[in-house]
Length: 151
Image 1: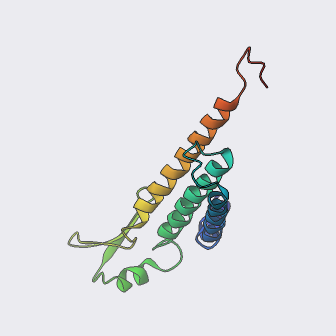
Image 2: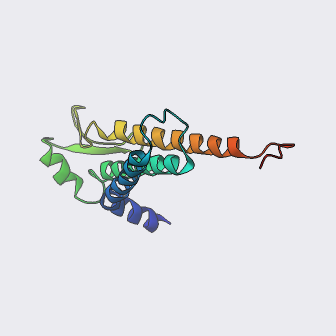
Image 3: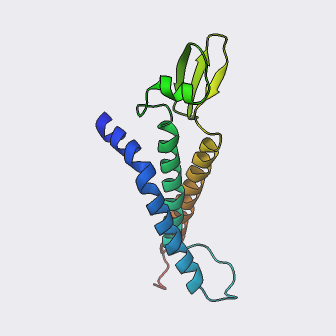
């Protein structure tokens, strides 16, 4: 199981951009086909699924990229030295929010994960959850009600 997780986290930054761009292109094509002036309407299940793929793919790809900063790929000593941490230090890691810090003897921390990573992960997860909820609500609303014989 751990090897599968490592494989996913290794490949996600490479694969997810293709999934996000593909879903965005499909979403743009769907928007272009819509008649101008047709007004606002609830998104279809397909639109919600595409939005969920965009949000989830962005969140997973950026999360995997952020986690890999200082994790496993390079020696933490090299990562810390490249970011300007001087002297002896301890590397601290957090999975959520994503953080990898080189903490020196005097308590100064040098963050290895860029500041934009956590907001993108949160925004992607939020978009994905909202799209799934809206898509599910749309499907439930379309179910025939008891006693409704119009179908």
